[in-house]
Amino acid sequence: MRKNIIWILVMTMLLSIFYPFTVWAAEDVSESNVEENAEGAAIGIAAPHAVLMEASTGTVLYEKDAHTAVPPASVTKIMTMLLIFEALEENKIKLEDTVVVSEKAASMGGSQVYLEPNEQQTVDTMLKCIAIASANDAYVAMAEFVSGSEEAFVNKMNERAKELGMENTHFMNCNGLDVDGHEISAYDVALMSRELLINHPQVHNYCTVWMDTIIHNTAKGSQEFGLNNTNKLIRQYEYSTGLKTGSTSKAGFCVSATAKKADMELIAVIMNGETSKSRFLDATTLLNYGYANYQIYRDTDAEREKLYEIPVKAGVETSIVPVYEKEFVFLLMNGESLTSIEKRLEIPEELQAPIEENQVLGTLSYYHGNEKLGEINILADKAIAAAKYSDYVKRVWLAWMM
Image (tube, rainbow, N blue to C red; front, side, top):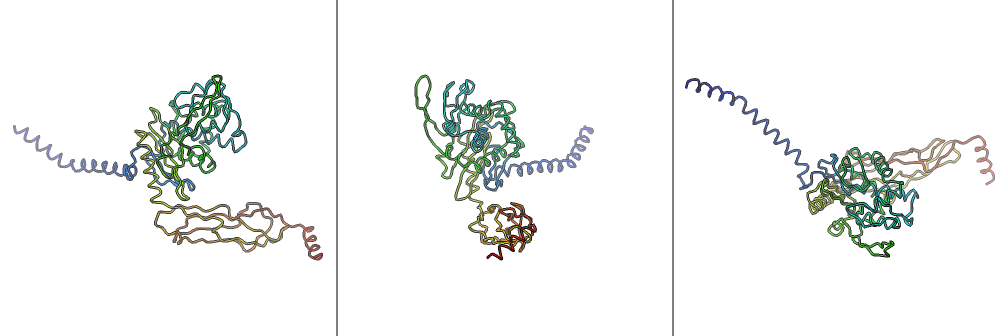
């Protein structure tokens, strides 16, 4: 009996020593989890992976486990569309070109427009099938048309992904059907979406169409086929401009939802949503968050200080008119005054030849209080060579003749 009492006393002493540390450790883990989850839960995003990006600046406004690679389903097709539009821009293909559907393309399962082997459709029609109906058969047909085979096209997709800095992406096909190793992060989806929007805005002519039709011309005759947009936000969200949905058993429900309000375009990416409805709800929440909390400051040529001629010493020409490199765009929190932005122009009063075309001559810097927001370069719009002896003689002669 005495031994039992001693044993109980010893255990009580040990618990009194170590219990506070156990509680502290448990509380610390709990607080850590709250902090980790706060970012994702702060605006009520149910999906495990999400990102909100402002298109013109590429600024990330919100993210939730955005760099984990996951199956993307048909969101893959954003890269496919990007390569198609780049081929159009480079005049490698044209909208009126005829695409002949292969046996492989016609055999694709999943979402499709039921193209038949040897059926012929224009590139323009294929783009409708791709952007509106997310047709796997049309994607493969276009991949073969652009690169000769789907395999070669997929190689190009992976090359382009590296060029865009998509570090957590690997493509195995052009349509997003579930295959081991075919994966992409939410952030990478935003990157390729941005590239498509910024450089090929004509994609909106296709992905904002709610319903359309195509004509199948086959050995069975002509038959009309209806196209319905898989992106319900086109009808449900006032500012929606696209872009692409996707769903498979492995990927869950995904969407890259783009919208434009006033002059601000946003990209909301949702990956592995639980239901179709929840992905659109999450995307809408992200877009509303962006528009409620941010605004764009944009300084264009029409609003900037006019640049005047700068004298050039010892050149074949005596002056040059500099030009701004680009417009300046910056993202501000709503409520911050745009009128408080200060511009500081730094440009020399005189230049020395030779001058190269697009040579940086100066800068225009932007400040908000004491914070420097950024700057743009001021460039030479042409080259001016250094003057030779014969140039001086010619100049004197012309002056004398006048």
